[in-house]
Image 1 (cartoon, rainbow, N blue to C red):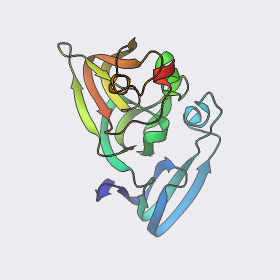
Image 2 (cartoon, rainbow, N blue to C red; image 1 turned 120 degrees about the vertical axis):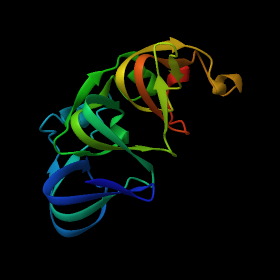
Image 3 (spheres, rainbow, N blue to C red; image 1 turned 180 degrees about the vertical axis):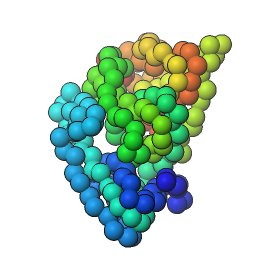
Image 4 (tube, rainbow, N blue to C red; image 1 turned 90 degrees about the vertical axis):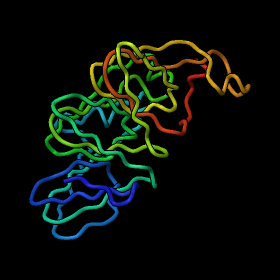
Length: 210
């Protein structure tokens, strides 16, 4: 159902089924398609609409029909994630599309979200199916194991899945070493067994000033 055309365009082939995607991300389609805006959240998507402390809203659309629909988001790289009953935690701004059968909600992240300036909640996707997430540059998938915990800069974090615990810890970032940071810097520490998706570019955060 989901396939990439290049690295920045998602093609979804549909035969009467549906896909949920970030509103405004459709760039082309062929065949017969019906579009439905889901501004009220609905079906577990409320968290994607109201999760940010600033009140910023993210609307979702459902696309159903026969044919192919193409999606993209500001020329970001697109990464496909297969879920086999497990749960994916992803920043809402990085979630491009999901199979209609996947359940989407929110999870409390505490200070990690505050350090990123993204609020206190992150989006969750769970069930059996495929999701498409975006990243600023090709995402790198890093393994977390009990023997090898992982520490990530909040600005580079995109998503994670598996039996992973996360905590916020103070530390020194490269920006602090170069004199570009201010205050005390924070990092995210992951422990357990799972995968963490990071991007080779850091979004603007307030992590260095918390």
